[in-house]
Length: 73
Image 1 (cartoon, helix red, strand yellow):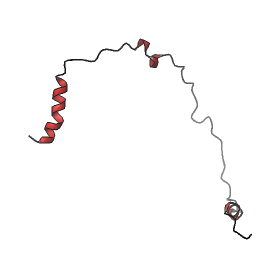
Image 2 (cartoon, helix red, strand yellow):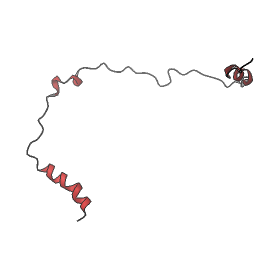
Image 3 (tube, helix red, strand yellow):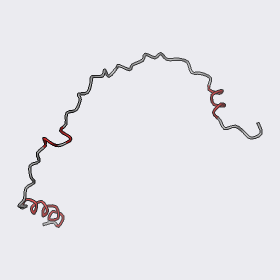
Image 4 (cartoon, helix red, strand yellow):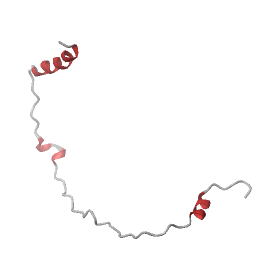
């Protein structure tokens, strides 16, 4: 047998022989089971604003305004 098969199969076989089973939890008092308010419906296109294509604005003035100022000017 391949050693890698034994390394993977041995823990599975040993865990199958475990004598203790987990206790069944009572979820009635669990904080996650508290009543949650239902989510209200929101239309997927509710915030849609119609926009039309526009011509580009002149970019040179915007570019010059954002560029770092040169020393001496």
